[in-house]
Image (tube, rainbow, N blue to C red; front, top):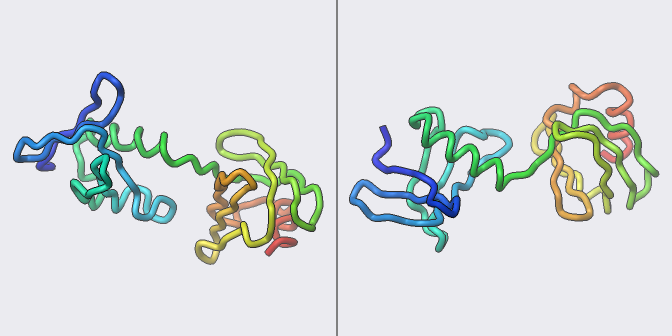
Length: 154
């Protein structure tokens, strides 16, 4: 059982109440490792950026607090996951990519090969020209056509 309370105020902001009764309105959860360990290592920060509490694992929290934190993290961390690469306009950059993601079909512009970053042996993070990051969790899970297109940029 955590030694703090968490709820939303009428304006939708998170309110953290410490064990000693100290209240911090506008608390913000931040993942330490949002892609590799999404349920682990979460810091709850005050609106001034000071850490209020470190949460080792979301699964150890009561359901109501866990739900609040998951909702807040989901609204802050928009990282669509690419499931398929349909088309790439050119193999030189900049190029327009047409992809299917967990959030639907979209197009984005890749400015340069440097905007594709390897996270580990199988995962990639791709930044588009607008600063939106797209995740490929496992390149081996992509279909053959998608892997062939992706290999041209790696």
